[in-house]
Image 1 (cartoon, rainbow, N blue to C red):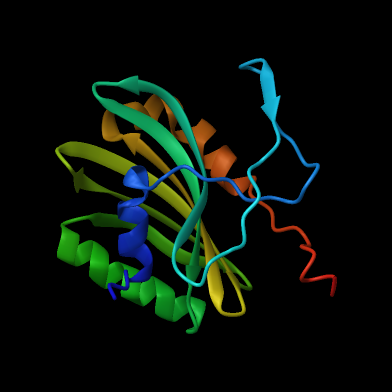
Image 2 (image 1 turned 90 degrees about the horizontal axis):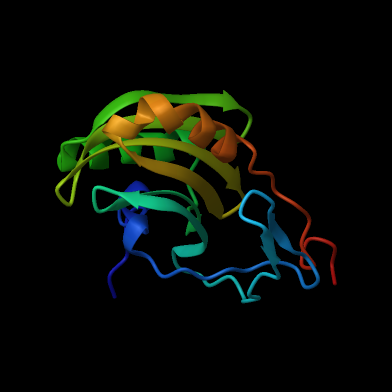
Length: 169
Protein backbone atom coordinates (compact mmCIF):
# COMPACT_ATOMS: atom_id res chain seq x y z
CA UNK A 1 0.00 0.00 0.00
CA UNK A 2 1.38 3.41 -0.96
CA UNK A 3 1.08 6.09 1.71
CA UNK A 4 1.68 9.68 0.66
CA UNK A 5 3.49 11.92 3.08
CA UNK A 6 1.41 14.94 4.16
CA UNK A 7 2.58 17.81 1.99
CA UNK A 8 3.60 15.78 -1.03
CA UNK A 9 -0.05 14.81 -1.29
CA UNK A 10 -0.99 18.47 -1.67
CA UNK A 11 1.43 18.83 -4.58
CA UNK A 12 -0.58 16.12 -6.31
CA UNK A 13 -3.94 17.64 -5.37
CA UNK A 14 -4.34 19.32 -8.74
CA UNK A 15 -4.69 15.79 -10.14
CA UNK A 16 -7.08 14.51 -7.47
CA UNK A 17 -10.68 13.60 -8.29
CA UNK A 18 -13.27 16.19 -7.42
CA UNK A 19 -15.56 14.86 -4.68
CA UNK A 20 -17.55 16.80 -2.14
CA UNK A 21 -18.51 15.82 1.39
CA UNK A 22 -20.75 17.91 3.60
CA UNK A 23 -23.71 17.81 5.91
CA UNK A 24 -27.06 17.07 4.24
CA UNK A 25 -29.15 20.09 3.33
CA UNK A 26 -26.16 22.45 3.11
CA UNK A 27 -25.56 24.27 -0.14
CA UNK A 28 -22.44 25.70 -1.69
CA UNK A 29 -23.28 29.09 -3.19
CA UNK A 30 -21.35 30.68 -6.06
CA UNK A 31 -23.13 34.04 -6.47
CA UNK A 32 -20.69 35.47 -9.05
CA UNK A 33 -21.27 32.41 -11.25
CA UNK A 34 -25.01 32.38 -10.59
CA UNK A 35 -25.54 28.96 -9.02
CA UNK A 36 -25.58 26.88 -5.87
CA UNK A 37 -25.30 23.14 -5.38
CA UNK A 38 -25.85 20.64 -2.58
CA UNK A 39 -22.58 18.87 -1.76
CA UNK A 40 -22.02 15.21 -2.45
CA UNK A 41 -22.11 13.32 0.87
CA UNK A 42 -19.45 10.74 1.71
CA UNK A 43 -17.80 9.15 4.71
CA UNK A 44 -14.33 10.55 5.38
CA UNK A 45 -11.85 7.74 4.64
CA UNK A 46 -8.74 6.89 6.69
CA UNK A 47 -6.49 7.97 3.79
CA UNK A 48 -5.71 11.35 2.20
CA UNK A 49 -9.00 12.74 0.93
CA UNK A 50 -9.75 15.80 -1.21
CA UNK A 51 -13.42 16.64 -0.59
CA UNK A 52 -13.39 19.97 -2.44
CA UNK A 53 -11.62 21.59 -5.40
CA UNK A 54 -12.60 24.93 -6.91
CA UNK A 55 -11.12 26.08 -10.23
CA UNK A 56 -10.79 29.37 -12.08
CA UNK A 57 -10.79 29.33 -15.89
CA UNK A 58 -7.64 27.80 -17.39
CA UNK A 59 -4.78 30.11 -18.37
CA UNK A 60 -1.85 28.72 -20.31
CA UNK A 61 -3.06 25.16 -19.77
CA UNK A 62 -3.36 25.49 -15.97
CA UNK A 63 -6.47 26.28 -13.93
CA UNK A 64 -5.74 28.18 -10.71
CA UNK A 65 -7.49 26.37 -7.90
CA UNK A 66 -8.21 26.10 -4.19
CA UNK A 67 -8.63 22.68 -2.65
CA UNK A 68 -9.36 21.20 0.75
CA UNK A 69 -7.55 18.02 1.75
CA UNK A 70 -8.03 15.96 4.88
CA UNK A 71 -4.83 14.11 5.77
CA UNK A 72 -4.37 11.54 8.54
CA UNK A 73 -1.55 12.78 10.81
CA UNK A 74 -0.73 11.77 14.38
CA UNK A 75 2.22 14.08 15.10
CA UNK A 76 2.24 17.69 16.21
CA UNK A 77 1.83 20.59 13.80
CA UNK A 78 5.50 21.62 14.00
CA UNK A 79 6.41 18.06 13.01
CA UNK A 80 4.04 18.37 10.04
CA UNK A 81 5.79 21.59 8.97
CA UNK A 82 9.21 19.93 9.35
CA UNK A 83 8.17 16.95 7.20
CA UNK A 84 6.70 19.35 4.65
CA UNK A 85 9.94 21.39 4.51
CA UNK A 86 11.92 18.24 3.69
CA UNK A 87 9.46 17.21 1.00
CA UNK A 88 9.55 20.67 -0.56
CA UNK A 89 13.35 20.64 -0.59
CA UNK A 90 13.37 17.20 -2.24
CA UNK A 91 10.94 18.46 -4.90
CA UNK A 92 12.91 21.66 -5.64
CA UNK A 93 10.20 23.86 -4.14
CA UNK A 94 11.25 27.10 -2.41
CA UNK A 95 9.50 27.76 0.90
CA UNK A 96 8.78 31.49 1.20
CA UNK A 97 7.11 31.21 4.63
CA UNK A 98 6.18 28.44 7.04
CA UNK A 99 4.90 29.36 10.48
CA UNK A 100 2.54 28.48 13.28
CA UNK A 101 0.03 31.35 13.48
CA UNK A 102 -2.11 30.15 16.38
CA UNK A 103 -2.88 27.00 18.37
CA UNK A 104 -3.31 24.21 15.80
CA UNK A 105 -3.01 26.49 12.75
CA UNK A 106 -0.06 26.99 10.39
CA UNK A 107 0.38 28.97 7.19
CA UNK A 108 2.74 28.07 4.35
CA UNK A 109 3.68 29.88 1.16
CA UNK A 110 5.95 28.35 -1.45
CA UNK A 111 6.87 28.51 -5.12
CA UNK A 112 8.48 26.28 -7.70
CA UNK A 113 8.04 23.97 -10.65
CA UNK A 114 5.40 21.25 -10.89
CA UNK A 115 4.54 19.33 -14.05
CA UNK A 116 6.09 21.93 -16.35
CA UNK A 117 4.51 24.94 -14.66
CA UNK A 118 6.07 27.57 -12.39
CA UNK A 119 3.55 27.70 -9.52
CA UNK A 120 2.92 29.76 -6.40
CA UNK A 121 1.06 28.17 -3.48
CA UNK A 122 -0.51 29.49 -0.31
CA UNK A 123 -1.75 26.96 2.25
CA UNK A 124 -3.28 26.84 5.68
CA UNK A 125 -3.02 23.70 7.83
CA UNK A 126 -5.53 23.22 10.65
CA UNK A 127 -4.89 20.35 13.05
CA UNK A 128 -7.49 18.20 14.77
CA UNK A 129 -6.75 14.98 16.66
CA UNK A 130 -5.42 12.46 14.14
CA UNK A 131 -5.78 14.66 11.05
CA UNK A 132 -4.83 17.85 9.27
CA UNK A 133 -7.18 19.93 7.15
CA UNK A 134 -4.98 21.43 4.44
CA UNK A 135 -6.48 24.25 2.37
CA UNK A 136 -4.27 25.20 -0.58
CA UNK A 137 -4.41 27.79 -3.36
CA UNK A 138 -2.37 26.87 -6.45
CA UNK A 139 -1.72 29.57 -9.04
CA UNK A 140 0.73 30.10 -11.85
CA UNK A 141 3.55 32.26 -10.48
CA UNK A 142 2.71 34.88 -13.11
CA UNK A 143 -0.87 35.06 -11.74
CA UNK A 144 0.17 35.67 -8.13
CA UNK A 145 0.35 39.47 -8.35
CA UNK A 146 -3.15 39.68 -9.83
CA UNK A 147 -4.92 36.84 -7.97
CA UNK A 148 -2.78 36.13 -4.90
CA UNK A 149 -4.75 38.27 -2.45
CA UNK A 150 -8.06 36.79 -3.61
CA UNK A 151 -6.63 33.26 -3.27
CA UNK A 152 -5.26 34.08 0.20
CA UNK A 153 -8.68 35.36 1.35
CA UNK A 154 -10.36 32.22 0.05
CA UNK A 155 -7.91 29.92 1.89
CA UNK A 156 -8.08 31.99 5.08
CA UNK A 157 -11.90 31.89 5.04
CA UNK A 158 -11.92 28.13 5.70
CA UNK A 159 -13.59 27.24 9.01
CA UNK A 160 -14.19 23.93 10.74
CA UNK A 161 -17.79 23.19 11.71
CA UNK A 162 -19.34 20.63 14.03
CA UNK A 163 -20.20 17.32 12.40
CA UNK A 164 -22.74 14.71 13.41
CA UNK A 165 -19.94 12.59 14.92
CA UNK A 166 -18.72 15.60 16.96
CA UNK A 167 -22.20 16.08 18.38
CA UNK A 168 -22.40 12.40 19.39
CA UNK A 169 -25.10 11.55 16.86
